[in-house]
Image: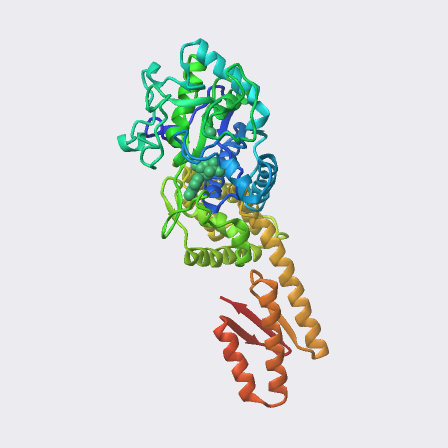
Length: 498
Ligand code: AMP
Ligand code: ZN
């Protein structure tokens, strides 16, 4: 598989340190607020990557941290503590906030079919490991004490800017945001490993350390958690593009200084989800959540498909129009899969069918091997639907590809098949009793709208029975304005909604 590597800035062949095993680390959420759908874009793409690596036969060992302490609003060790900010906003303790938003994050992941990594480590559970790593960095001469804090000394490295395309302006972080520069730093790229003195006198969570009562800098948690959970050699490290600098740059600096050898050769970064007015940001408080999408009538799978439809290395602009067309596409895809017969007869020519199935698999793998081209991998599903093979083989292939794409396709199709069966039965029963059956052919419509449509359809039928055609036509127009199309049968009205 070829995967773009932010470290080498080329698409490299993906290899692992230990054959057959992939050690994968993911920077987890800062749990001071709900994850927004931008954050979740990153987790969706990492999830697809993990599942595809498993699909190719690798034993993926994956770890993710939960940042529940120490992440300041500016990445330059300045600004407010994000957790403290969340706690103040909601009049709760930092740990209450952390627990609540960690659970909310997992609930969002579940809705979006994002597999929770095997090892999830809250930063507050590993403070001893962080202290031990900082002690070694001081011993080895890579860190110094100044103004009460411990700093990493970036001048000790030959190559600090490993993600070397940073503009000088980006490196002047902090200054740009109008925050005072930290006088205790020897160099502006040095960063805090452990705080004992900062402007937050009221920091809620503090721990004893050899340098006094304090708390860790943000970057140290990922280095220490990764080394303790996955060992000295990592194969793949992931995050959103904003993590590349300074967070990942600093992680590399710390980990390699600590270990004394190269640490992780492959870095996967997902570009941002933006709104038409700019970047979606958790700290500004203006963002979209999965729950909001659901409230507006979008199945979380529609958002997952929306994300898979574009390449992870391109910024993605969120729009409701885009969501609407993806909703239609998802509905159509599920309908086509539902039309396949799970009890179809076996193939007449199994060898030919096997060959076609292999060719379809190759098309899917080729797309994914090409720097995780999920949009093309999704089109492989349509290739399966169009192929000249039996329904059972089609369903098996769709299930196989969906073990990676995770769009709930077989489950949604089975549900639709069941609904169609029930509708057919209702239609038949209505024909026999001469009672009107109202049959919905747009299963994605929310129950409230469906009930309102059914009420109007019955009202129209009553008006027609009373030969009140003007009223009947007016109701039909009203429904049409709602995007509802009617198909009148003998004793049935079937309806669809765009
Ligand atoms: P945070 O909870 O802020 O630490 O971010 C969690 C993950 O979401 C990190 O990997 C970030 O790089 C990523 N991220 C933040 N903002 C966005 C965005 N607008 N689009 C995509 N990913 C993002
Ligand atoms: Zn991290």
